[in-house]
Amino acid sequence: MTPHTADSTEEISLERLIPLLLRAIRWALPAALLSATVTYFALKQQPLVYESASSLVAVQPGPLGSAGSFTTPLVSVAPLDPQAYKEAALSTQVLGQALAMAGEPEGPQALMRLRQAAKVRTVDGRQSSIITLRVRDRDPARAARLANAWAAALRGWEDQRAREHFTRYRRSVEAQLEAILTEIRQARQLKDPDRLRSLDALRGNLARDRDLAHALEESAVGLLALLEHAQVPLAPSAPRPLLGGAAAAVIASLLFFGFVLLREALVRAVRDSEEAARVTGLPVLGEFPRMPPNGKRELPAEAAAFLRTGVHHALADRHPKVVLVTSPEKAEGKSSVAIALARAYARADLPTLLVDADLRRPVVHREFGIAKGWDLVESLRDFTYSVHAHPVAPNLEVLPCLEAPENPAELLAEHWRDFLNNLVHTGRYKVVVVDSPPALAVSDALILAPHASGVLVAVSEGATDRKRLEATLEVLSRVGARVVGLAMTNLRRGPAASGQFTYGYGYGYGPVAVADRKEHKGLPKAGGPKSS
Image (tube, rainbow, N blue to C red; front, side):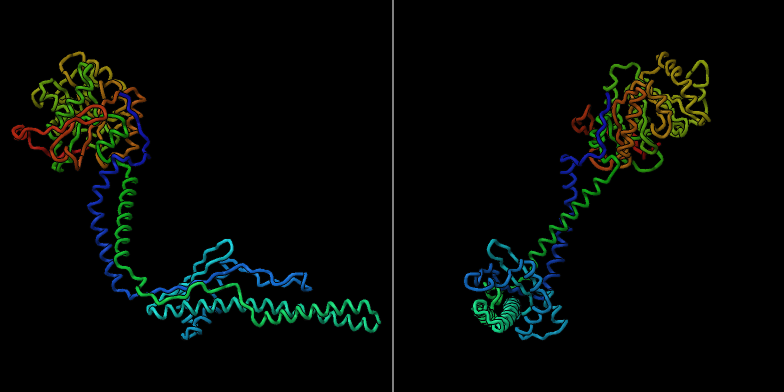
């Protein structure tokens, strides 16, 4: 089977997301309830605040005169855009006038408090704009009084702007009129009756413009008109404990779930068997729970039997079967898996040889208490490649490595293929299980793997890095190794972690097989697996 490597940066799938959220909701609900309760009672302690609003409308101006009746066109005050009215409403001049009109104390602090309590909202239309002035205060009557005074102050500011417009126009007309009078005096001295009549008519028009401008200056009004008076509010606008508590619960839940999703997305290690199968495209042939660290490597026999079934099915066409067990890096349980698989084959009445080919950090001899005798290094150096294995159980023999050689890679590269061919041709064993070094740590596993019937990769839940696992499968594929599946170790949850083990082929998982209680009584006491 050629592994299909998925992109390690893939998004969390819906299949993975739903169980994750279901587990997270157990903590999100108490967090949301706590946030809602704290927020509710905190808001209940806050003083009541009332809000009152007045509205103004800013209309477009029209012309007051034209060249047909006056010497110079007389146009009303130029309009301002809504943002300019908003800035004017919040100016010190308008706010100070509002305080004075409302009978409130004036001063820098009073202006600051009013500016903090005031809010302006504008809606711009085609022909007019709506300006809404809102004031918040603990006293509802005072809030309404300030809102109305604020509207009156803004209208007063706009009226003053209009008066100043007509004042400037009147002064311009008066300057023109003074110039005409000068020309009239000169025309009289020159005794020019035609020019005198023309200038006299122009003087009359300017005098009428001056009088009109003066009248408009006295009665000028701006472009703002009151649309709605502020009313005394009957109910407070804040605080709202129920609404605040609900919002706090929603925000706390969203933050909690966001944190969970972010944490899940940042995890680089393989989370479980399903993710391992999805990332690699390989079947998970066996699952082993995390065991107590009591120095033993004896994994549960039932889980090992399921692993043996999966491997046996994947290598049904190979006789004898040479199964190499490796892992991406150290401390991921490969040696424990190799020992458990060899014992499972031996319990199935198949003559089995367990070879410790991890010549750098051998551990198998310690597991079986082998301190001396023939080992793999001597077999490799022997030109006949003879095997003098150590019987350790019915149908199970072990060829350990008792002492690490100085040049393990060179020794394996030169002699492993011939040694393995000689071992297979003897016909003594139906199954040979090889414990090899980690594939990414040293090159030894890449020397051994191409000569095996199949390679089994040990993956530690929550510890094996996804990218390192993908890299392991990539290098094994490059050397022509046949990876048959994965063995998950150190499971912390799920059926395998509770003593129930799943098995299956391909991507799927078969039915959960629960051992009979009598079979459980006959199993050896499980110890904690060591990883190498």
